[in-house]
Amino acid sequence: MISKKIFALLLFEFVVLNCYTEFRSVAQLLPEEEVRALETISSKLQNRYWNVSRSSCSSGGLNGTIAGGFISNVTCDCTFSDNSVCHVTRILLKEFNLTGVLPEEFSNLSYLLELDLSRNYISGSIPATFGRLNLTTLKPHQRFDSPEIGDIATLEELILEDNQLGGTLHQNLGSLRRLRRL
Ligand SMILES: *[C@@H]1O[C@H](CO)[C@@H](O)[C@H](O)[C@H]1NC(C)=O
Ligand SMILES: *[C@@H]1O[C@H](CO)[C@@H](O)[C@H](O)[C@H]1NC(C)=O
Ligand SMILES: *[C@@H]1O[C@H](CO)[C@@H](O)[C@H](O)[C@H]1NC(C)=O
Ligand SMILES: *[C@@H]1O[C@H](CO)[C@@H](O)[C@H](O)[C@H]1NC(C)=O
Ligand SMILES: *[C@@H]1O[C@H](CO)[C@@H](O)[C@H](O)[C@H]1NC(C)=O
Ligand SMILES: *[C@@H]1O[C@H](CO)[C@@H](O)[C@H](O)[C@H]1NC(C)=O
Image 1 (tube, rainbow, N blue to C red):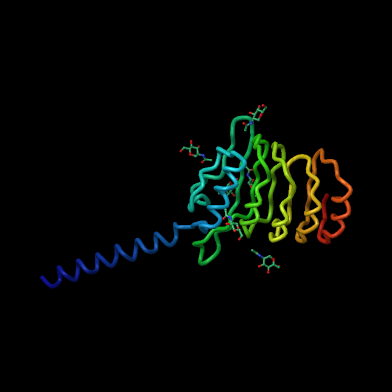
Image 2: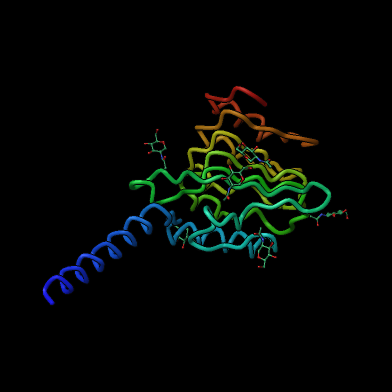
């Protein structure tokens, strides 16, 4: 009788402990704030290709290739808080025909280092809030003329295709001290 009880107890503990470790090693979640930011970005750009949730980094819901080679490639760093917390570090959304104004919510992704939105129909200037980011690489939407670019002090690469640089933009590039590639 007693040994049965002990056995049951041991079994219970085994299961609980096992679930706990399983859970800890599997769950790699995005913070709510980044989920909200990604959702807002998606709806503002009418991006139908992302499945945004807290587990997007492990489920692959942000990655996809559409026939024709249009690529969405989102990279997360999931090494935070003992490998349980992810942050979005790189977003490539290329040739998706996205429309709308460049959402300032990109700057809510605090760990974003690279952003490539080339070959879309996104309009608007670079939001001043981008200056909060430690962005190192920016490949913006076509045709922009944003003096705010000078506020992203961490920028190392600015890749402009078919962009006509305006006078103010020109001047502000001078304040990008880390720029290696233009
Ligand atoms: C982005 O950050 C700003 C400032 O912290 C906040 O007011 C806003 O609600 C955030 N937006 C989203 C979509 O989380
Ligand atoms: C997307 O794919 C790249 C490899 O192509 C991978 O490194 C990355 O972790 C994937 N991201 C997500 C959110 O699944
Ligand atoms: C998003 O979910 C839909 C429906 O489940 C699926 O068809 C689509 O391939 C998913 N997209 C990505 C990028 O995972
Ligand atoms: C996605 O990005 C990662 C990180 O830069 C890169 O290693 C990988 O090759 C990319 N995948 C695709 C399909 O472009
Ligand atoms: C973008 O538009 C081009 C030209 O209309 C089309 O061929 C392509 O399939 C579109 N791409 C996507 C991802 O819808
Ligand atoms: C951005 O860079 C600053 C200065 O190097 C650093 O203190 C801060 O932690 C970085 N932010 C993130 C989100 O990595």
